[in-house]
Length: 414
Image (cartoon, rainbow, N blue to C red; front, side):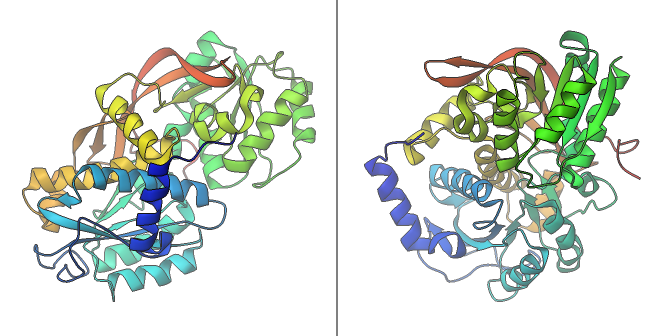
């Protein structure tokens, strides 16, 4: 689908490109200059710009996610007048390329030469896990906008790292009970064969079977798979009542299109997590994902005041509908801003005290950072994709309540 490009969008992106040199440069929002700033480890001055290092991905498989997170964060900073706690906000964006070695090198640059006060990173769980020790050693307060590895809330939990998205447990568990009780008792569960897929399938299987369902088969195609014919044949041969699947990016697009073309869409209900109702997928495949049922923490159509304002502002700024990753970027900004406001300071220890249990109104609704896991507790809904007016519109079926991250007995964890 080709979108028209508004004059506002061109002007704003040209400004950010000039100010920041794209994702690899510094975005100065409300900043008068580059002087001042803190030292690595949050021990620096509370005057001068508040320096945030945002290490995302602008190239590679996570580039679209990186752009969405950046857009959401930039929007929140702009709406805040370019200031948090009275300090002008300066964001230095770096591309980690989804590569742990690149990320470690960029981390040293940000905490050394750039002397950042706060870190925002990463998208990839492999990068996140590689950064835990350096973050702890350098005592760098970090907000995680996406990386979902369960271990980040458990054995790798750090007093300096707080996640605003979800864990893989929260991708697989919500919706399992609803599906078992309302869609079908016998399921085939699929996900790409990498840690996120493995953890997500394990979470769904445990919750589905606890609710009285039976997972007939777990299927784990390789990450980056292009042809799902073999796996779709396995689904057909298993004769399940329902299919549950977690894929992302191009894998999700390929699977959804092939599920329809293989003739399964009308015979076996397709269910899964938030991927199936997110604009990144629905706008890419259109009618191919009609009827898909998802458990999700965010829809652009959620009816709350914060979301209405966010969606309007995002569309005006970027001429497109926000996706869940745009929300994560926006909530990174809100998390930092709220922590500073409630602490009454940009002192790192004061902010950490506030972050443990911090609650605020997100476009998702109210979220709370659990002090035990540093992971958000958030509300979920079941949604069904409806095709109307030549586009997919996810419609809420049922509110299924709040889900957090347990501290023990997590499926798929050794």
